[in-house]
Amino acid sequence: MSYSVTEPSSRTKWFAGSMVILYAIITLLPLVWIIATGFKSPSDAIAYPPKVVFTPSLEGYVNLFTERTRVTPQMLEEAGEPTKWYDKIVHEQGAVISGKSRYGERFFNSVIIGFGSTLLCMILGTAAAYAFSRFRIPLKDDLLFFILSTRMMPPIAVSIPIFLMFRQLGLNDTHLGMILLYTAVNLSLSVWLLKGFIDEIPIEYEEAALIDGYTRFQAFYKVVLPQAATGIASTAIFCLIFAWNEYAFAVLLTSGTAQTAPPFIPTIIGVGGKDWPAVAAGATIFLVPVMVFTILLRKHLLRGITFGAVRK
Image (cartoon, rainbow, N blue to C red):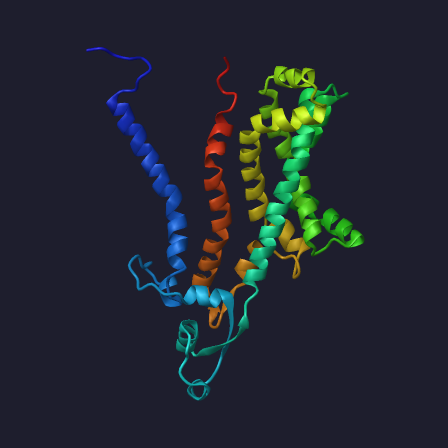
């Protein structure tokens, strides 16, 4: 019976597969529970022991997107039978819809700030990483370490100085201020990651392009950028995840106009207290853009993680 040193045995494959499945279950269970809670009624959401089998309800999503006012039974009778399905759900709670909630606005703010800062971070980070990779810069190592050191500080340590600076500049509670702030925080990560990817691209490609008459910018745009696409995609995912989920700066520097979803979701209050199905529904919807973005770029992400791992 032949035995291969590189080919794992069937027992090893079975053990590795079992570990992967176990890890996937442990990782996905909280996500599945949040999604399921969004379809529970408030009583089922706080039931003890927790209910695994329940009657699905859209009450949490209705409460998430509406403002409700409790009224007397007599006022409900005077209002007549509800004509829309969400009005019926609210009437069953003994309330009427008084307006729209601000979750939609906060979610849209997250889209603007998250994707805006990621785009700006990729533009500046790619240019800086290319410069560090290809040109002789005085004190290059010191500058790279200084850039990385900005990532070492916890956000709360610099939140007060940033708040005072933003107040003087008029950037408090603005989309521009949050985009610039998240770009500054993520720039160190993008420069370091992208420099590693660009270092792996042979400089001979650019030299050949320059000999053919390309300018330095044309060589960068037509030769380097396509080669670094996997690195840019994977770096963009990490930058978007930080900007999308960031909480400390969003709480301190925004309150209305530019407030994002993370500080808004915990403030969702139901008619009788904390509305956990609405909170779970808001968290579920909030997960979708990053999940879709990551799925669309998953091939680039996997290639980017292993890029340069094997040298010829």
